[in-house]
Length: 386
Ligand code: FAD
Image (cartoon, rainbow, N blue to C red):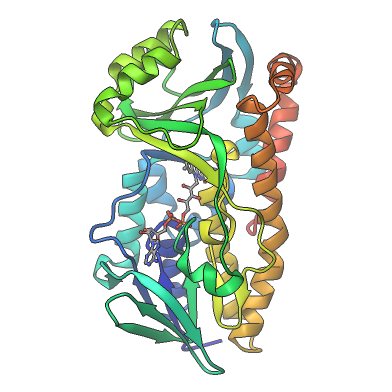
């Protein structure tokens, strides 16, 4: 279809990538975000090859490579510093045709925003509802303004307002653990600069991976009751207590991090939805399928959504609602499967059933690297770019 106008709610990874893809398809695009200033939530993100391939197609490959870290291997180590598994990831890159890129979120956001054009993102616009008729869809904002187009894309995250219009109220499920994350200067005493290391034990984990600019993205995870809060100043002390006795690099990491710049998040997801679209309204990214981050696929799926939605609008000619139905059919099972797979992995990593977690620690030692690569390749190759 030609000459469409899309109204996108949310200028996160999903909304911006959709905006870039739709612009390239020749559509008029307006993006609205409730934030007064765009600041990415979280410090880093690993874009696996399926997400990278879409960004390559959008002409962003070179820029992404420049901000990405060179991660060539992954290693699991125990909290008593025993190596449990070491996987050279380069055979994976050869198999799928593209390396993944761990990146700092600010760098990714800047890259996407510049590619779309910051002047066309309308900030301070809280969407409170959507309406549609046979010919158009309209987003309604708290300040009384309205924006109409041929379609509205709800890329407004896990607590999506647009989703309420499509499927009604959906509650976030708490995944029973807290994640701390941030960036530190790369240092070989913390981690090999081309390695993604994960220390695991006691149903907790501590991890570092390289991102561009000579930095490591780090994260910690530990089971915790819902509703705890710790002010930034005390986050280093909190981590020192939770990871007391863990190996030297973990202790050094805790000492090296800046507590004021360390995010502390309660992690959650949503149950797979029955529908992702309604007429001329489409859900995309976390609003459609928020997942726990244990597969590192949430952002990649938002990027895949952007590609598939734009492709159906561009290549079919039976009307917007028809294209949206095709988008839903292409994305629903793929994303639901990954949400449920990540949920299961979360339960194992974070000790929902302690015996299963212990079993996983011993399985890590037995699992051949080819099996790890095979599992990663299957997820990547099932994406829209193969
Ligand atoms: P968001 O990034 O949440 O963006 C939504 C936007 O909508 C925001 O800018 C918000 O201000 C705006 N908004 C919300 N409500 C409204 C409203 N009512 N009106 C107007 N604007 C609104 N994914 C990966 O692929 N790899 C990883 O390694 C990875 N690691 C992760 C680690 C952690 C700790 C977490 C929490 C997630 C991780 N993810 C990862 C998942 C990834 O961050 C998300 O899937 C991705 O950011 C979702 O993007 P989005 O654009 O759909 O939503």
